[in-house]
Image 1: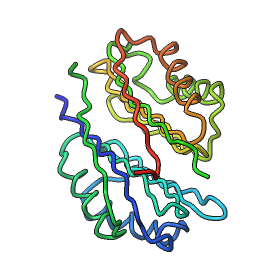
Image 2 (image 1 turned 45 degrees about the vertical axis):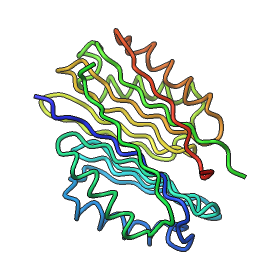
Image 3 (image 1 turned 120 degrees about the horizontal axis):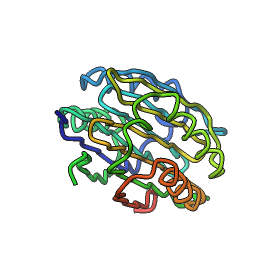
Length: 116
Length: 116
């Protein structure tokens, strides 16, 4: 039995560059978001871009969560793809927005599953 | 200067389950796809689901590429998010489709960048 897949695609605009320039502070935020939303981590990885900017990725039992930041544009691209409860994906985005406090969020939700 | 971000979201239907059940054969396909499309890998990780099914993720200098497979539904969910040349993302999907030979592909391309 296949539970519906939900892919939340979000653009966060107007984020304080201090919050998203380096791996460590962003990792602390993401770890909190992932654990509080009940997502189950299989593997995670981060990459520091120089002079600034971070990519972070969580391989989840439910699929994946990723963030890519462009501090110079105060911009974060977020993907949260979950199979099973879509609520966890929505909840994770809400928590991330509370933590990063963007001025503006553009959000798209796509259903993804094997049923054409 | 920010190059346009392109996110290719693709659903592959009717894929031979043998090709997508275990990590190793799928990893061989993905390694070929990533290297031939000119994407630059920062980190990669795979997860084997039991009794079958694979998640694979590439953190790229250009952003990320992920696949999640559901062999029991002959289904693969693909994401290729690249900043810089969108051609590499399109090329990677074409190569992946040639390798996995799905019966049907549904593809969406989303522009993602800091320009509201």
